[in-house]
Amino acid sequence: MFEGVLPAIITPFQRDHSMALDTEGLRSNIRYLLDQGVHGIVPCGSTGESATLTFEEHEKVIEIAIDEVNGSVPVLAGTGSNNTAEAVRLTKAAKDAGADGVLVISPYYNKPNRSGLIKHYTILADIGIPVVMYNVPGRTGQNLLPDLVTELAKHPDIVGIKEASGNISQISEILEGTMDEDFLVISGDDNMTFPILALGGSGVISVAANVMPARMAAMYEAFCEGDFQTALDIHYELAPLFRAMFIDTNPIPVKKAVELMGMAAGPVRLPLDQLDGTKTARLSEVLKSYD
Image 1 (cartoon, helix red, strand yellow):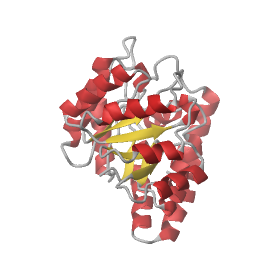
Image 2 (cartoon, one colour; image 1 turned 30 degrees about the vertical axis):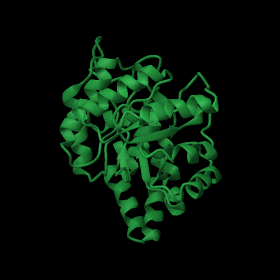
Image 3 (cartoon, rainbow, N blue to C red; image 1 turned 90 degrees about the horizontal axis):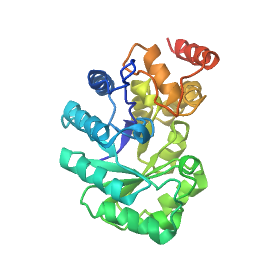
Image 4 (cartoon, rainbow, N blue to C red; image 1 turned 60 degrees about the horizontal axis):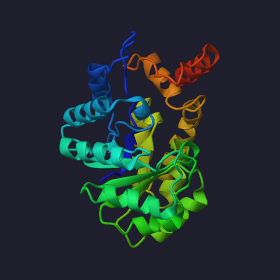
C-alpha cells in the first residue's frame, strides 16, 4: 500500500503573530502534489513540524489530508511521540479519521531499552491500523537495529519501516531479514532512494517531492519499469536539490523552497528559525537551475 513516492508534506502556517494553521494552503498544496502524480501523502511527520503542533492541530492536519485525498492515494499519518500514551492517542485519532496507516518515529530522548521498544510498537500496532516504523537516529539518538526490526516485522500490523539511518549495510540486512514477511522498507532519505530500490526497497517518504513531485515519481516509475538508466539519470539530475533540502535543519529549507515557488508555506515555528539570507540565495539558485 505504501509504495512509491510519498511526500512528507509541510504544514503551512499563517504569516502573522498567530502562526495558525493555513488550512486552505494545506489543501492547495495537497492538490498540487496529487496532480503531479505522487503515490501517497504523509502528514505530520518531521517535515510537517509535528513536534510543535498541538494535539488539536495534529488531528486537524490529518483530517484535512484524508478529506482532500479522498481515497485517491494512501494517507500515512505521523503519530509518533516519545510518550507511548500520547502516541496511542494520536494513533487512535488517525484511525478514527480514516488514515490508511500511521508512521511512528522511535521514541526520541528517552532511549528506551529493547523490551521497551517492542512494547511501544506492539501497543500501537494492536490498535488495529497498519504501522510503519521510522528509524532516524540523527533525530532520536537511537538506532533501530536489524534484529529488532526483524522481530517486530512479525506483527501482522507492523507493515514496514522508513529507514533514515543512512547505513546501506543495515538497510540491506533489514531487507534480508524480512524477506519472508509482507514488509516494506521505505527510504527516509531522498538521496538513498535509488540504492534502496536496487536492494528491494519499496519507495521513499520524501522531502524533495514537496518541490519536484513529478520528477521524483518519474524516477520511481522508471525504476519499476526496469529502465534503470533513466532512473539513475533522474537521481543525478535531482541530486543538487536533495542536497539543498538539507543546507539547514529540515524542514527549514523545504518550507522556504515551497514559498519561493509561490505555494503555501509560512514561517517555521520556534525553536526552528528562518533560513538566513545567504542560504536562501543558494537555495534560490538551485531552484532556478531547474527552471
